[in-house]
Length: 209
Image (cartoon, rainbow, N blue to C red; front, side, top):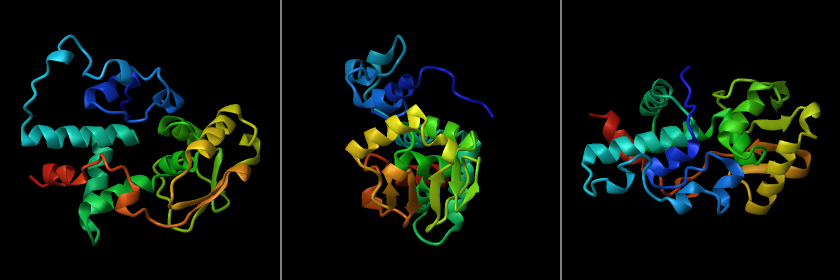
């Protein structure tokens, strides 16, 4: 699968807002978007102010793809699944994205970013209901219990992430015990509990053309 290998902070600058792709750096004064709040490149400061409806829809899709670290084919698959489900397509899409194992590990506070959470999962450091799962896209069911394998409990990066999460807090729809590094995916998040900057209806409109 193709991977983005350039500086992740360029993605935040391109979208004009923090996407929290670099862990602790995003919360510090070292975040580039704080110093250069414009798109990267030689014409970044001279962007046209007027954007078409299609442009807004495209940018929103790109933003959400980058937040969750997905390629176009993956993201389109999630949308198609969401569209087939009963209920509101946009909210269904967010629920599917939030239920990814790498995202749940990140939301639990066991990783400083979704990229780091993906590494932790791939390195077979996470158990779901007592079974090791190393597939980042694994869909976590409501009620599932997640925990670290014993050998991972003393990893410095995990402990540092958990310490930061203890200060900032974890997702409201998870029951997390940070000292023991385990938690339960208690329920699907309500829309008001998710990122208010995401305008999922624009993505629905884009893919519905």
